[in-house]
Image 1 (spheres, rainbow, N blue to C red):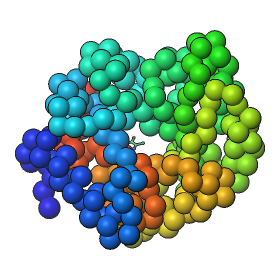
Image 2 (image 1 turned 60 degrees about the vertical axis):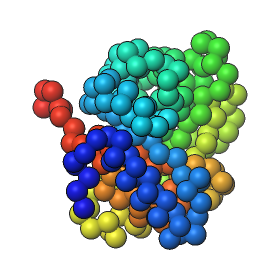
Image 3 (image 1 turned 90 degrees about the vertical axis):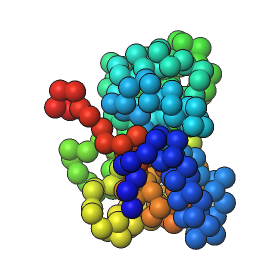
Amino acid sequence: MDTMTGSIDARLREIKNRIASAAAAAGRSPAEIKLVAVSKTQPPESVREAISAGVGIFGENKVQEAESKIDLVGRDSAEWHLIGHLQSNKARRAVRLFDMVHSVDSIDLAERLERICEEEARVELPVLIQVDLAGETTKNGIAAAEMPSLVDFLNSCRYVKLRGLMTVPPYFEDVEKVRPYFAELRQLRDVYVPHGELSMGMSHDFETAIAEGATIVRVGTAIFGEREYANGK
Ligand SMILES: *Cc1c(COP(=O)(O)O)cnc(C)c1O
């Protein structure tokens, strides 16, 4: 299956069909699954093209890049989600820019976001906890064992609202090897954020994620084509 040819519009239609089929196969309604189009490294023109094709939510992984892009495309023309690691010195800009932050992974960061929301009169900031299921110290995310205190803290927040969990599993060519990570995130969600969002699944494995309960899939390459990194990464 070649998803790398054709227009953004055509690829998007194909992705939506695949989401619908995966949902149907799992006995779920496609309406339960939100598509976040991951536009990192993509130029504003591609984002505009995706908006015309019907995309309503974009995912960006860097505050700086998102800031200039959102400025050019228009803050109100879509929903903007931060899916990459958030450095504490960029928390204020993130609070101003994003509709949802998928990558909260420490009490320090959560505290900072809560304080900034108050200062910026942001009455509600929906967030997900990013969980590191593989225990890869190079990866972002909090270990499952450390989740309870972060969950307790977030549940005590007035402005920052815990809405669910997110994970980026290790990459395996064989998607069946990713499935246990998705299943594990779902179990954690059932314990810590019942009925909350499950942000999991990317271009390569979103159908498996949907089978395991994903409510948000983050798809970049399969919509926009391969990313080009201007200077290495
Ligand atoms: C880049 C990225 C994606 C999208 O990856 P694709 O393989 O291009 O679909 C999803 N989630 C996160 C956190 C990312 O950084």
